[in-house]
Length: 268
Image 1 (cartoon, rainbow, N blue to C red):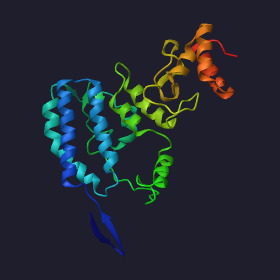
Image 2 (cartoon, rainbow, N blue to C red):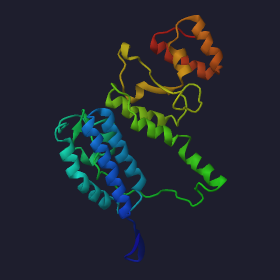
Image 3 (tube, rainbow, N blue to C red):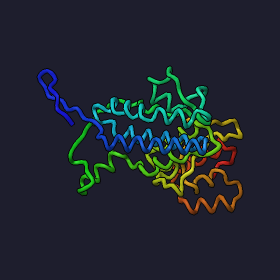
Image 4 (cartoon, helix red, strand yellow):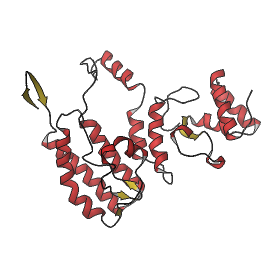
């Protein structure tokens, strides 16, 4: 960190440390080498998750754009040499790419397995808004403020969704899968309970078999039990999950709306 005089004020210039830049370069190169061995969408998504994770972690450094330009330059040769046989400059960037890397839409992009690799230097400094020293991991009050700020969204779940895209699903589906989890604040649309990795499923409101698509507005996260209740057609199975879930009237109304969309009868 450096302090520089700017007219009548002093401003801080903050950089990534040399060690941090070396670690970032190493992580990105490791992911690129994995793509060379397995050139599939899953491995490309893992590289993108690594790039995005580094961006999010260091974006509050004021000179982060310069730092990531140096990182991008350092891995440029590895990226080209390792992926020249499996990459292409033709493809359609994902919804996430279009939203978060608008400045790069007109620039040359690298696609592997039809997935666009995120621009390594596609980062801008972001001010830490509403920062308070009260937010920390070391006091009860500080941890409470962290949880309130996160609004119950599990960082572990978000990282898992980013690093483990659903194979054989569209890029749009996997992008919206992350966005929908965050938008729902990590809770089931029907029951309101916290979603955990072993008990959460993404439901198509209008099923694919009935013309539904992978668009954001056609997806909703629910628990496995709620998902089974939506698609259940026999009385025994319906009663089993009704007893298990003990739904309130508002929750049952949501189930019925989704059942109708799925072509099943309303429950009373």
